[in-house]
Length: 144
Image 1: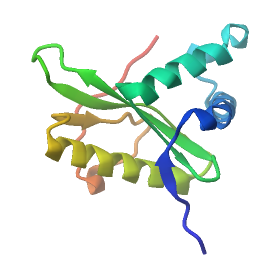
Image 2 (image 1 turned 30 degrees about the vertical axis):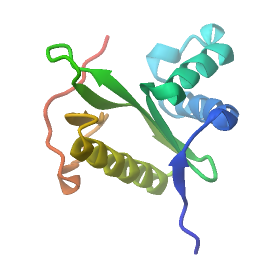
Image 3 (image 1 turned 60 degrees about the vertical axis):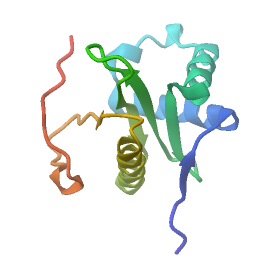
């Protein structure tokens, strides 16, 4: 069986990413995007273009069943210091989500070793334990 390839997305993947954003909404009904009348494909393209231009990266699998968006953010306290933050992570199957996460962690570890970032994060919306990926739990996300 051929294992799904995870790769960096580019502008030619934008339509598939938009489909995955819609799938994310259908699955999770996230309140931030609940007013679909405000959705803008043009805005998504602009945001993705900024990410592709160096703000971070987007990972996608070859069959476009999942994606992970990562942003390289400056540290507020220390100049020329950056952190990598997963901003969105969605997959249609648990297997794709795990593969995306593993690739994100691989890139993050390499970037940390190379000095491009000092630390990296990803969000967990549930009770999953990620210590097997050498991650530590540092907080919870609250929203209203």
